[in-house]
Image 1 (cartoon, chains in turn yellow, orange):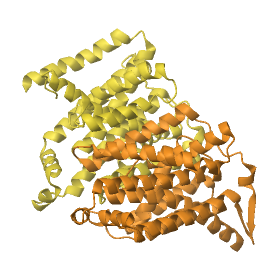
Image 2: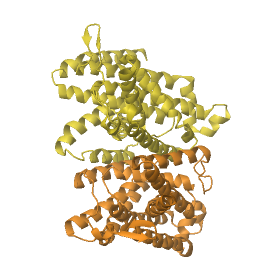
Image 3: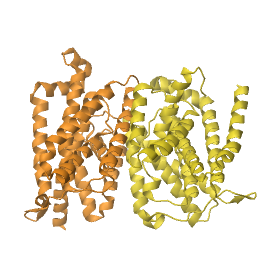
Length: 316
Length: 290
């Protein structure tokens, strides 16, 4: 166990140092990696909800959009520092999830669709609440990341370090939750929700807690993205892509693993942008839809775990 | 004021009839197979685009494209039925992810073939006004209202009076008992997918002649159909009809007295209210709740 944490630490340090050196000159590739990590973080949050909470969501775009608007508005109109904006993005996304609590009373497919409907509601509100959000025109000139300790974080490399830090923190949090008593109860719930209820576990409360945590994580990433690209509009911030790409990434990487969704996002997003998009500029996500369908049929536990198992490797 | 309300109610009922066709398809498949087909709205949209293609490329009157739409959409639903049947475990959730993937493929396929532009019918005949006392509608709206009523009547007759329809209802209410009576559930499921495809083909053509279409419309049609089934309570044909009319009327009242941008929101608020207050639906049995 100790040896594994050590090697994980080495890998993470190498990611911090080597990727910017290797790609630093190529701003396009660097922005691809930042976007892939952002999606990887959402995929992780989505998989946490699915793996520990037993809930499939088709509406994570709602949390992402709420987080990005909350941070942009608080920083621009109330003068909050960006770091506080990132946290607030997460908190607002979690608060917006309170509205979804009645949907927890619904069984699997109903919950999934109810959340899809919620995502639509938030997009419409962001479009119509013009005094706050600027309506369909959006918000431009959202403040960039500042200079900290002499380093200017507003560039691609600065953004890379920030999003990598966020994702690494999320991985650690996920790991802590999974190995805690709550994680045990959640895993038991996965086997039999009725039996777990009988021994005194409040399963709805635990599910709600996972929903809030997942929403918080996604909101933080939304806030990060708002300050990274400096522009927001409802159709972008609440775009179904923020739901679809993480789902494909998480299933591809294995949604029952912790690092799988992040790795899956790197593979799926980079291949989609660098290969499929070159081949067919419009509608290239048709391939991702086909990929998702094929995985559900042939490798529902994930493509990466299946490939790694074939090579005899273990997957964290 | 009364005139405005009457007009809004009238328009709402006309739109609601097309919604009913979409929601009935979703509900039929759910009944026999216990899956929610997340690609259902995209299938309706596919029919709409077929009407568009026949009109713009071949110069066909949009209604004449319906046979082609039926064939294409039913092939698509048969394929969906086939792949969903091949899911090995966690059927409920994996079928959602699988049909979601099919929806993504259809949306992007539409984007690829028909581009992101907004399309609507060029037929002047269909857009002529029909005046009924103080009430006003387009010819296409009235036409498809009649078509929907006939189809729903036929569906009702089929479900209650024919062997195949009864087999479908039996499978929906108790699959194991139906099997003991010699009903092959796989076949019944296929039939439900085919009927859903048939209704979707008409609904899509209606949507195209009544309003405008674009690739992103599919998912919101699925959401509307889902809202209707939640309002109805996933149980009965009359419940779905009432839910569809309620949604249509709510939307059109919102458009008349607030703004058309808020019409989708009004449907959602209705949905939230039902979810909070009466999760078993307004008209149905308690199925969805734990």
